[in-house]
Image (cartoon, rainbow, N blue to C red):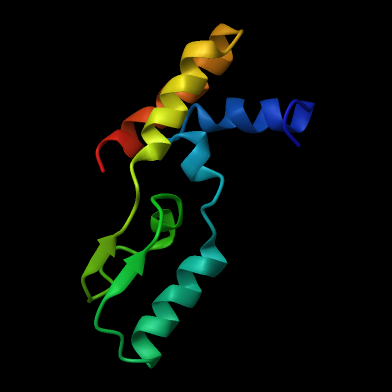
Length: 104
């Protein structure tokens, strides 16, 4: 999908989002609902996310603590993508992805 008109349309739509495209593209109401059901039905004590990206699917107010377990190499990768991008638009897209990863 990368480099196609649909990809660039998704990037443009994402400009209105508070989340960078690299995170927002993985938002899934079905996944959020499945996590919520699992927490409720299986008496979960703690939710662990292995990456920042799936954390976008944790519902607010799950009722249990959550932990983000992530190696911070992603921030360096996104920063490098932003540095070497050929177009202003792609530098902006990749630059937006750095901040959420850099905080973890």
